Image (cartoon, rainbow, N blue to C red; front, side, top):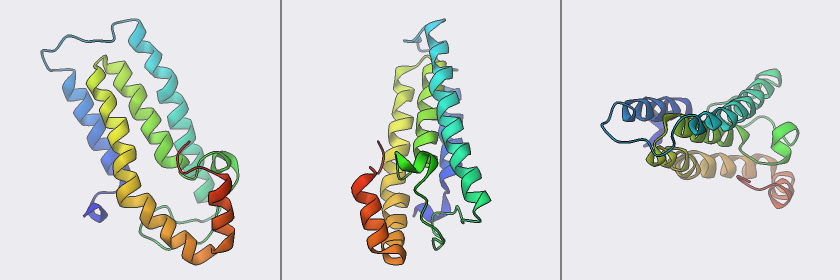
Length: 147
């Protein structure tokens, strides 16, 4: 099902939905200037995701969730989470949600993690387990899937 929607496409769909929510005749729950605090998680999440993506490019590791893994990364943000790209995007979505001022937009960040976990991460981790065996098992024991 989710093979047709890539994680970046899902991210973009959620951003568009959040910006359309701004046009709804609903009073904002997070008012100015407090909504500007959303810049912090947006910037951090973006940095985390871009940093992990650059690391994959530098090491010639395929990024598409349905390709076969070539390397097991355990450095940079991968020391703290097994999914820094997905987590970074989710944190960025939470930041955008705060910027919009609508509390219900926070659901998009949570929904992103849930969908990625079900449709991408579990599939990727099966492939990593098959390819790297005990090395991946040890990595899973010391590094959480999300936080």
